Amino acid sequence: MASFGHIANLERRFLLSTYNRYPVAFARGKGVFLFDLEGRRYLDFVAGLGVNALGHAHPRIVKTIREQAARVIHLSNLYYNEYQGQLAEKLCSLSGLQRAFFSNSGTEAVEGSIKLARLAGHRIGGEAKCALVALEGSYHGRTFGAMSLTGQDKYRKGFEPLLGDVKFIPRDDVDALRAAVNHNTSAIVLEPIFGEGGIYECSAEFLRECRAAADRHRAALIFDEIQCGLGRTGNIFAFQSFGVTPDIVVIAKPIAAGLPLGAFLAKEEFASSISAGQHGTTFGGGPLACRVALEYLAIVEEEKLLENVVRIGSYLQGQLQNLVGENGVREVRGRGLIQGVQLDRPARPIVEQALAEGVLFNSTQETVIRFLPPFLLEEKHVDKGIRVLKKLLKR
Image (cartoon, rainbow, N blue to C red):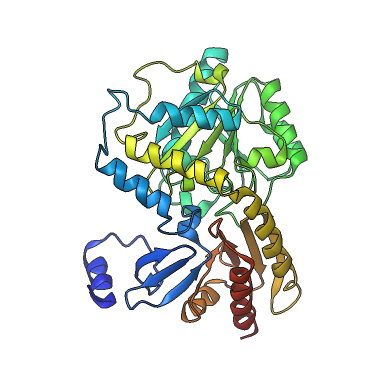
Protein backbone atom coordinates (compact mmCIF):
# COMPACT_ATOMS: atom_id res chain seq x y z
CA MET A 1 0.00 0.00 0.00
CA ALA A 2 1.27 3.48 -0.88
CA SER A 3 2.34 5.76 1.95
CA PHE A 4 0.53 8.97 2.80
CA GLY A 5 3.57 10.98 1.69
CA HIS A 6 3.61 9.29 -1.72
CA ILE A 7 -0.14 9.87 -2.23
CA ALA A 8 0.09 13.54 -1.22
CA ASN A 9 3.17 14.11 -3.39
CA LEU A 10 1.50 12.67 -6.50
CA GLU A 11 -1.45 15.00 -6.01
CA ARG A 12 0.79 18.02 -5.47
CA ARG A 13 2.59 17.24 -8.72
CA PHE A 14 -0.28 16.26 -11.01
CA LEU A 15 -3.67 17.50 -9.76
CA LEU A 16 -5.12 20.96 -10.21
CA SER A 17 -4.69 22.85 -6.94
CA THR A 18 -8.40 23.12 -6.18
CA TYR A 19 -8.62 21.28 -2.83
CA ASN A 20 -7.29 22.34 0.56
CA ARG A 21 -7.26 18.80 1.93
CA TYR A 22 -6.79 17.67 5.53
CA PRO A 23 -3.61 15.64 6.18
CA VAL A 24 -5.14 12.15 6.17
CA ALA A 25 -5.82 9.46 3.54
CA PHE A 26 -8.52 6.86 4.07
CA ALA A 27 -8.26 3.27 2.92
CA ARG A 28 -11.62 1.81 3.95
CA GLY A 29 -14.78 2.36 5.96
CA LYS A 30 -17.27 0.34 7.96
CA GLY A 31 -20.55 1.70 9.30
CA VAL A 32 -20.02 5.12 10.87
CA PHE A 33 -16.23 4.75 10.91
CA LEU A 34 -13.39 5.36 8.44
CA PHE A 35 -9.89 3.87 8.68
CA ASP A 36 -6.71 5.55 7.46
CA LEU A 37 -3.73 3.90 5.76
CA GLU A 38 -2.26 2.86 9.11
CA GLY A 39 -5.57 1.40 10.31
CA ARG A 40 -6.46 4.21 12.72
CA ARG A 41 -10.23 4.58 13.21
CA TYR A 42 -12.21 7.82 12.84
CA LEU A 43 -15.82 8.49 13.80
CA ASP A 44 -17.39 10.10 10.73
CA PHE A 45 -19.69 13.12 11.21
CA VAL A 46 -19.08 14.26 7.60
CA ALA A 47 -20.29 11.21 5.62
CA GLY A 48 -18.72 12.36 2.37
CA LEU A 49 -20.48 15.73 2.77
CA GLY A 50 -23.83 14.01 3.18
CA VAL A 51 -23.32 11.33 0.52
CA ASN A 52 -22.69 8.32 2.77
CA ALA A 53 -26.05 8.37 4.53
CA LEU A 54 -25.84 4.58 4.97
CA GLY A 55 -22.32 4.83 6.35
CA HIS A 56 -19.57 2.83 4.69
CA ALA A 57 -19.64 -0.66 3.18
CA HIS A 58 -23.30 -1.32 3.97
CA PRO A 59 -23.63 -5.06 3.22
CA ARG A 60 -26.77 -4.70 1.10
CA ILE A 61 -25.17 -1.95 -1.01
CA VAL A 62 -21.97 -3.98 -1.47
CA LYS A 63 -24.01 -7.02 -2.55
CA THR A 64 -26.10 -4.97 -5.00
CA ILE A 65 -23.03 -3.36 -6.59
CA ARG A 66 -21.32 -6.73 -7.00
CA GLU A 67 -24.38 -8.35 -8.55
CA GLN A 68 -25.14 -5.53 -10.97
CA ALA A 69 -21.50 -4.89 -11.95
CA ALA A 70 -21.32 -8.52 -13.07
CA ARG A 71 -24.38 -7.99 -15.29
CA VAL A 72 -24.05 -4.52 -16.87
CA ILE A 73 -22.67 -1.21 -15.55
CA HIS A 74 -23.48 1.23 -18.34
CA LEU A 75 -25.92 1.39 -21.22
CA SER A 76 -26.46 4.41 -23.42
CA ASN A 77 -29.68 6.34 -22.91
CA LEU A 78 -30.39 5.35 -26.51
CA TYR A 79 -31.80 2.19 -24.91
CA TYR A 80 -34.02 1.22 -21.98
CA ASN A 81 -32.55 -0.33 -18.84
CA GLU A 82 -34.33 -2.26 -16.11
CA TYR A 83 -33.96 0.22 -13.29
CA GLN A 84 -34.31 3.82 -14.53
CA GLY A 85 -38.09 3.65 -14.86
CA GLN A 86 -38.43 1.84 -11.53
CA LEU A 87 -36.40 4.51 -9.76
CA ALA A 88 -38.34 7.32 -11.44
CA GLU A 89 -41.62 5.72 -10.35
CA LYS A 90 -40.38 5.33 -6.76
CA LEU A 91 -39.18 8.93 -6.49
CA CYS A 92 -42.35 10.31 -8.07
CA SER A 93 -44.44 8.24 -5.67
CA LEU A 94 -42.46 9.49 -2.66
CA SER A 95 -42.50 13.13 -3.75
CA GLY A 96 -45.93 13.51 -5.34
CA LEU A 97 -44.28 14.97 -8.45
CA GLN A 98 -44.82 13.39 -11.85
CA ARG A 99 -41.57 13.21 -13.87
CA ALA A 100 -37.88 12.55 -13.22
CA PHE A 101 -34.63 13.22 -15.06
CA PHE A 102 -31.37 11.58 -13.94
CA SER A 103 -27.96 13.25 -14.13
CA ASN A 104 -24.48 12.52 -12.79
CA SER A 105 -24.46 15.11 -10.03
CA GLY A 106 -26.41 17.71 -8.13
CA THR A 107 -25.02 20.66 -10.03
CA GLU A 108 -26.05 19.02 -13.33
CA ALA A 109 -29.53 18.50 -11.94
CA VAL A 110 -29.65 22.22 -11.04
CA GLU A 111 -28.66 23.05 -14.63
CA GLY A 112 -31.42 20.81 -15.99
CA SER A 113 -34.01 22.36 -13.70
CA ILE A 114 -33.08 25.87 -14.93
CA LYS A 115 -33.40 24.73 -18.55
CA LEU A 116 -36.81 23.22 -17.83
CA ALA A 117 -38.03 26.37 -16.04
CA ARG A 118 -36.90 28.57 -18.92
CA LEU A 119 -38.60 26.35 -21.50
CA ALA A 120 -41.81 26.52 -19.48
CA GLY A 121 -41.42 30.28 -19.04
CA HIS A 122 -40.96 30.87 -22.75
CA ARG A 123 -44.03 28.76 -23.50
CA ILE A 124 -46.11 30.88 -21.12
CA GLY A 125 -44.70 34.36 -21.63
CA GLY A 126 -42.31 34.36 -24.57
CA GLU A 127 -38.55 34.91 -24.52
CA ALA A 128 -38.78 37.73 -21.98
CA LYS A 129 -40.00 35.29 -19.32
CA CYS A 130 -36.53 34.07 -18.37
CA ALA A 131 -35.57 35.89 -15.14
CA LEU A 132 -34.49 33.95 -12.04
CA VAL A 133 -34.77 34.81 -8.35
CA ALA A 134 -32.34 33.24 -5.88
CA LEU A 135 -31.22 33.81 -2.29
CA GLU A 136 -28.24 35.63 -0.83
CA GLY A 137 -25.93 33.17 0.92
CA SER A 138 -27.11 30.20 -1.14
CA TYR A 139 -25.01 27.52 -2.86
CA HIS A 140 -26.12 25.49 -5.88
CA GLY A 141 -22.93 24.17 -7.48
CA ARG A 142 -19.96 25.14 -9.62
CA THR A 143 -21.12 24.95 -13.23
CA PHE A 144 -22.10 28.25 -14.84
CA GLY A 145 -25.86 28.10 -14.36
CA ALA A 146 -25.62 26.77 -10.81
CA MET A 147 -22.88 29.29 -9.97
CA SER A 148 -25.03 32.08 -11.38
CA LEU A 149 -27.70 31.19 -8.79
CA THR A 150 -25.19 30.92 -5.92
CA GLY A 151 -25.51 33.97 -3.68
CA GLN A 152 -21.90 34.00 -2.44
CA ASP A 153 -19.32 36.15 -4.19
CA LYS A 154 -16.42 33.85 -3.29
CA TYR A 155 -17.78 31.13 -5.58
CA ARG A 156 -18.60 33.54 -8.44
CA LYS A 157 -15.57 35.83 -8.42
CA GLY A 158 -13.30 35.50 -11.43
CA PHE A 159 -15.77 33.60 -13.59
CA GLU A 160 -17.91 36.48 -14.83
CA PRO A 161 -19.89 37.08 -16.93
CA LEU A 162 -22.37 34.58 -15.56
CA LEU A 163 -25.97 33.86 -16.49
CA GLY A 164 -27.93 37.11 -16.76
CA ASP A 165 -31.31 38.05 -15.30
CA VAL A 166 -30.67 36.69 -11.79
CA LYS A 167 -31.89 38.69 -8.78
CA PHE A 168 -30.72 37.85 -5.26
CA ILE A 169 -32.86 38.54 -2.22
CA PRO A 170 -32.26 37.94 1.51
CA ARG A 171 -33.53 34.67 2.96
CA ASP A 172 -36.93 35.09 4.69
CA ASP A 173 -37.44 38.63 3.34
CA VAL A 174 -41.03 38.52 2.09
CA ASP A 175 -41.06 42.16 0.94
CA ALA A 176 -37.91 41.65 -1.15
CA LEU A 177 -39.46 38.50 -2.62
CA ARG A 178 -42.60 40.33 -3.68
CA ALA A 179 -40.53 43.14 -5.21
CA ALA A 180 -38.26 40.74 -7.13
CA VAL A 181 -40.80 38.34 -8.63
CA ASN A 182 -42.78 39.58 -11.63
CA HIS A 183 -44.36 38.42 -14.89
CA ASN A 184 -40.89 37.88 -16.44
CA THR A 185 -39.74 35.54 -13.65
CA SER A 186 -39.33 31.96 -14.87
CA ALA A 187 -38.19 30.46 -11.53
CA ILE A 188 -37.59 31.05 -7.84
CA VAL A 189 -34.68 28.82 -6.79
CA LEU A 190 -33.75 28.10 -3.16
CA GLU A 191 -32.42 25.61 -0.63
CA PRO A 192 -35.02 25.01 2.13
CA ILE A 193 -31.99 24.58 4.41
CA PHE A 194 -28.72 26.20 3.36
CA GLY A 195 -25.89 23.66 3.39
CA GLU A 196 -22.61 25.30 2.33
CA GLY A 197 -24.21 28.59 3.39
CA GLY A 198 -23.97 27.64 7.07
CA ILE A 199 -27.09 25.58 7.95
CA TYR A 200 -29.79 28.24 7.87
CA GLU A 201 -33.44 27.21 7.45
CA CYS A 202 -35.91 29.16 5.39
CA SER A 203 -39.01 29.86 7.47
CA ALA A 204 -42.21 28.02 6.57
CA GLU A 205 -43.89 31.42 6.15
CA PHE A 206 -41.28 32.51 3.60
CA LEU A 207 -41.57 29.22 1.69
CA ARG A 208 -45.37 29.65 1.57
CA GLU A 209 -44.88 33.16 0.19
CA CYS A 210 -42.49 31.77 -2.43
CA ARG A 211 -45.16 29.24 -3.39
CA ALA A 212 -47.78 32.00 -3.66
CA ALA A 213 -45.48 34.29 -5.69
CA ALA A 214 -44.61 31.49 -8.10
CA ASP A 215 -48.30 30.68 -8.58
CA ARG A 216 -49.21 34.33 -9.03
CA HIS A 217 -46.65 34.86 -11.79
CA ARG A 218 -46.72 31.34 -13.29
CA ALA A 219 -43.08 30.74 -12.40
CA ALA A 220 -41.46 27.48 -11.30
CA LEU A 221 -40.69 27.09 -7.61
CA ILE A 222 -37.45 25.05 -7.50
CA PHE A 223 -36.14 23.54 -4.27
CA ASP A 224 -32.49 22.47 -4.21
CA GLU A 225 -32.45 19.55 -1.75
CA ILE A 226 -29.08 18.19 -2.79
CA GLN A 227 -27.74 18.41 0.76
CA CYS A 228 -30.86 18.52 2.92
CA GLY A 229 -32.99 15.96 1.03
CA LEU A 230 -33.51 12.20 0.83
CA GLY A 231 -33.98 11.66 4.54
CA ARG A 232 -31.62 14.09 6.24
CA THR A 233 -34.42 16.13 7.86
CA GLY A 234 -36.36 13.03 8.96
CA ASN A 235 -38.60 13.11 5.88
CA ILE A 236 -37.54 11.73 2.51
CA PHE A 237 -37.89 15.24 1.06
CA ALA A 238 -37.10 18.34 3.08
CA PHE A 239 -40.12 20.13 1.57
CA GLN A 240 -42.30 17.60 3.39
CA SER A 241 -40.84 18.91 6.66
CA PHE A 242 -42.00 22.43 5.76
CA GLY A 243 -45.37 21.64 4.20
CA VAL A 244 -44.68 23.46 0.92
CA THR A 245 -44.47 21.51 -2.35
CA PRO A 246 -42.24 22.91 -5.12
CA ASP A 247 -42.78 22.52 -8.85
CA ILE A 248 -39.29 21.04 -9.25
CA VAL A 249 -37.04 19.45 -6.63
CA VAL A 250 -33.35 18.74 -7.16
CA ILE A 251 -31.69 15.81 -5.37
CA ALA A 252 -28.32 14.05 -5.42
CA LYS A 253 -25.74 13.30 -2.68
CA PRO A 254 -26.96 10.10 -0.90
CA ILE A 255 -29.28 8.75 -3.58
CA ALA A 256 -26.92 6.08 -4.97
CA ALA A 257 -24.98 5.47 -1.74
CA GLY A 258 -21.75 6.96 -3.09
CA LEU A 259 -22.10 6.29 -6.82
CA PRO A 260 -22.50 9.47 -8.92
CA LEU A 261 -26.21 10.16 -9.44
CA GLY A 262 -28.41 13.24 -9.30
CA ALA A 263 -31.96 13.97 -10.40
CA PHE A 264 -34.65 16.57 -10.67
CA LEU A 265 -38.33 15.77 -10.26
CA ALA A 266 -41.00 17.98 -11.79
CA LYS A 267 -44.72 18.54 -11.93
CA GLU A 268 -46.26 17.54 -15.25
CA GLU A 269 -47.16 21.13 -16.22
CA PHE A 270 -43.43 21.99 -16.27
CA ALA A 271 -42.13 18.60 -17.43
CA SER A 272 -44.34 18.76 -20.51
CA SER A 273 -42.40 21.81 -21.75
CA ILE A 274 -39.41 19.70 -22.83
CA SER A 275 -39.17 17.40 -25.83
CA ALA A 276 -36.77 14.78 -27.17
CA GLY A 277 -33.31 16.14 -27.88
CA GLN A 278 -33.57 19.26 -25.72
CA HIS A 279 -31.71 17.74 -22.76
CA GLY A 280 -29.68 14.61 -22.16
CA THR A 281 -26.76 12.90 -20.46
CA THR A 282 -24.26 10.14 -21.22
CA PHE A 283 -23.89 8.63 -17.75
CA GLY A 284 -26.99 9.78 -15.84
CA GLY A 285 -29.48 7.05 -14.95
CA GLY A 286 -27.31 4.05 -15.76
CA PRO A 287 -28.35 0.58 -14.57
CA LEU A 288 -25.75 0.28 -11.79
CA ALA A 289 -26.46 3.66 -10.18
CA CYS A 290 -30.25 3.31 -10.50
CA ARG A 291 -30.31 -0.20 -9.04
CA VAL A 292 -28.18 0.94 -6.10
CA ALA A 293 -30.47 3.96 -5.59
CA LEU A 294 -33.50 1.65 -5.40
CA GLU A 295 -31.63 -0.37 -2.77
CA TYR A 296 -30.79 2.83 -0.85
CA LEU A 297 -34.46 3.80 -0.67
CA ALA A 298 -35.43 0.25 0.34
CA ILE A 299 -32.85 0.24 3.15
CA VAL A 300 -34.00 3.64 4.46
CA GLU A 301 -37.56 2.30 4.59
CA GLU A 302 -36.94 -1.24 5.86
CA GLU A 303 -34.35 -0.28 8.49
CA LYS A 304 -36.60 2.60 9.65
CA LEU A 305 -33.76 5.07 9.25
CA LEU A 306 -35.99 8.15 9.03
CA GLU A 307 -37.15 7.42 12.57
CA ASN A 308 -33.51 7.15 13.60
CA VAL A 309 -32.69 10.48 11.92
CA VAL A 310 -35.44 12.19 13.95
CA ARG A 311 -34.49 10.49 17.23
CA ILE A 312 -30.72 10.84 16.99
CA GLY A 313 -31.00 14.27 15.35
CA SER A 314 -33.00 15.47 18.34
CA TYR A 315 -30.46 13.95 20.72
CA LEU A 316 -27.55 15.55 18.82
CA GLN A 317 -29.25 18.94 18.84
CA GLY A 318 -29.91 18.69 22.57
CA GLN A 319 -26.26 17.90 23.28
CA LEU A 320 -25.08 20.72 21.03
CA GLN A 321 -27.52 23.18 22.62
CA ASN A 322 -25.87 22.42 25.97
CA LEU A 323 -22.67 23.98 24.58
CA VAL A 324 -24.27 27.32 23.65
CA GLY A 325 -22.89 30.25 25.62
CA GLU A 326 -19.67 28.48 26.57
CA ASN A 327 -16.23 28.45 24.94
CA GLY A 328 -17.27 30.56 21.98
CA VAL A 329 -20.40 28.64 20.91
CA ARG A 330 -22.98 31.18 19.79
CA GLU A 331 -25.82 29.19 18.22
CA VAL A 332 -26.96 25.76 17.02
CA ARG A 333 -29.01 25.50 13.80
CA GLY A 334 -30.67 22.83 11.71
CA ARG A 335 -32.72 19.68 12.24
CA GLY A 336 -32.43 15.93 11.86
CA LEU A 337 -28.89 15.08 10.76
CA ILE A 338 -28.08 18.40 9.08
CA GLN A 339 -26.92 20.71 11.85
CA GLY A 340 -24.44 23.52 12.39
CA VAL A 341 -22.68 25.06 15.38
CA GLN A 342 -21.91 28.76 15.06
CA LEU A 343 -18.63 29.72 16.70
CA ASP A 344 -17.13 33.12 17.46
CA ARG A 345 -13.82 32.03 15.90
CA PRO A 346 -12.50 30.00 12.93
CA ALA A 347 -13.75 26.43 12.89
CA ARG A 348 -11.07 24.79 10.75
CA PRO A 349 -8.46 24.55 13.54
CA ILE A 350 -10.96 22.56 15.62
CA VAL A 351 -11.64 20.27 12.65
CA GLU A 352 -7.87 19.74 12.23
CA GLN A 353 -7.36 19.03 15.93
CA ALA A 354 -10.28 16.56 15.95
CA LEU A 355 -8.37 14.34 13.50
CA ALA A 356 -5.86 13.55 16.25
CA GLU A 357 -8.81 12.57 18.47
CA GLY A 358 -10.21 10.19 15.83
CA VAL A 359 -13.28 12.28 14.92
CA LEU A 360 -14.18 13.84 11.58
CA PHE A 361 -16.00 17.18 11.72
CA ASN A 362 -16.48 19.66 8.89
CA SER A 363 -16.24 23.45 8.76
CA THR A 364 -18.14 25.80 6.47
CA GLN A 365 -18.48 29.58 6.23
CA GLU A 366 -15.25 29.93 8.24
CA THR A 367 -16.91 29.81 11.68
CA VAL A 368 -19.49 26.98 11.44
CA ILE A 369 -18.93 23.33 12.39
CA ARG A 370 -21.26 21.31 10.19
CA PHE A 371 -22.71 17.89 11.05
CA LEU A 372 -23.87 15.63 8.18
CA PRO A 373 -23.41 12.18 9.74
CA PRO A 374 -24.68 8.81 8.49
CA PHE A 375 -28.29 7.93 9.29
CA LEU A 376 -26.98 4.90 11.24
CA LEU A 377 -25.61 7.14 14.01
CA GLU A 378 -26.31 6.08 17.62
CA GLU A 379 -26.35 8.02 20.90
CA LYS A 380 -22.96 6.58 21.91
CA HIS A 381 -21.46 8.05 18.73
CA VAL A 382 -22.98 11.45 19.48
CA ASP A 383 -21.56 11.25 23.02
CA LYS A 384 -18.06 10.56 21.69
CA GLY A 385 -18.27 13.45 19.23
CA ILE A 386 -19.54 15.87 21.87
CA ARG A 387 -16.79 14.85 24.32
CA VAL A 388 -14.13 15.60 21.72
CA LEU A 389 -15.79 18.85 20.62
CA LYS A 390 -16.06 20.08 24.22
CA LYS A 391 -12.40 19.29 24.83
CA LEU A 392 -11.26 21.15 21.73
CA LEU A 393 -13.51 24.16 22.37
CA LYS A 394 -12.01 24.52 25.85
CA ARG A 395 -8.54 24.30 24.41
